[in-house]
Image (cartoon, rainbow, N blue to C red; front, side, top):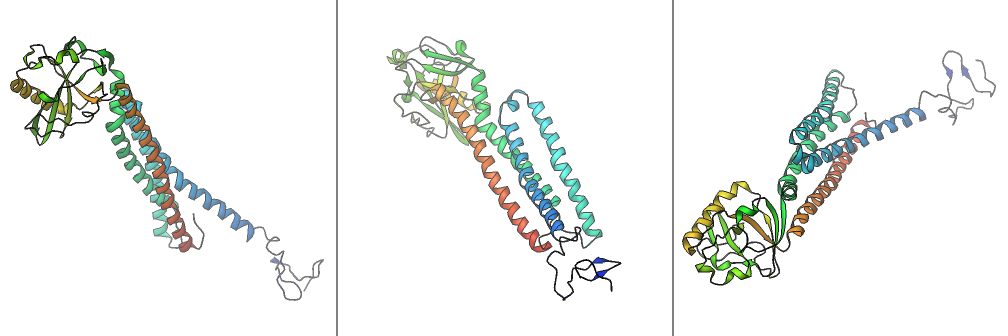
Length: 334
C-alpha cells in the first residue's frame, strides 16, 4: 500500500481515510475533509437561527402593523386606504407563508424523511397575529382613538355661561370648559330605561340656579351617562358628579345612545316643567382638555402594552416549537 509524506496510509481511489498508521483517529481528519463535519454543522446552525428569528419577528411585526394601522389616525382620516393596506399585508404575509407551508406539507407527504419545516409554524402564527391585530386595533380605535380624533376635530369653547348660550350656538362643540360656579343640577336629573338606563342631568351656571324651577329659558346643556341612576328618582351619579372642582365636558360620541338621552330629556321636561329646545349631550369631566388628552394617552399605552405582550407570546410559541423540532429532528431544523 502506498504511503504519504507523513507515513500514513493513503487510499488512492478514496483519498485520505483519517486513520493513522498506528490505528488511531487523526484529529485533523475532519479539517482535511471540507465537505463533512465542522463546516456542515456550522452552516446548519446558521440556517436554524435565521428560521427562528423569522418565526419570531414576522408574525410579531405583522401584528404591530395591523394594530397600528387600525388604531391611529390613518384609520380615522382615510378608512379606505386603511382597508386596502390590511388586505395587501394579509396577501403578502399570510398568503405567502401559506404557500410555502403548503409546499412543505406536500414534500412531507411525498418524502417521509423530509425534516420538520418552520413554514407551517410561520403561516399559522401569522394568521393568528393578523386576526388578533384586527381585534386589538379595532378595539383600541373604537374605545379610545376614534373619540380622541373626533373631539380634536370639533370646536373647543372656554368660559361658557349656560345662561348666555343656547344649544344652537354651540352645535359644533367637542370640548367645553364652563365658567366657575357651573354645576350639575342633580335635583332635576332623569333616567330613561331601555334595557340600559340612560341618565341625564342639566348643566347650569351659577346665575341660573336662582328660581331654576320656574325658569322659561331653554336648558340645552346636559351631562349624560349609562346605568348610573335608578331611572325612578333624581339620583344621577355618573362619572364626575362628585367632583366639586369639575368644570368641563366632552361631547358624547355614542350616536346610538343619542335618541334614548333625548327621551330622558323629554321626561325631565315633562316632570320638572322645563324646556330643552336643542339639547346637547356631554360627559362631565374635571377639565375638557385633560380628558381629551387622556383618551390619546390610553390609546398609545394600550398599543404599546399589546405589542409588548404579543412579542412575549410569540417568543414563547417559538421557543416551544424550536425545542420540539430539535427533539424530532435531532437538532436539524429547516
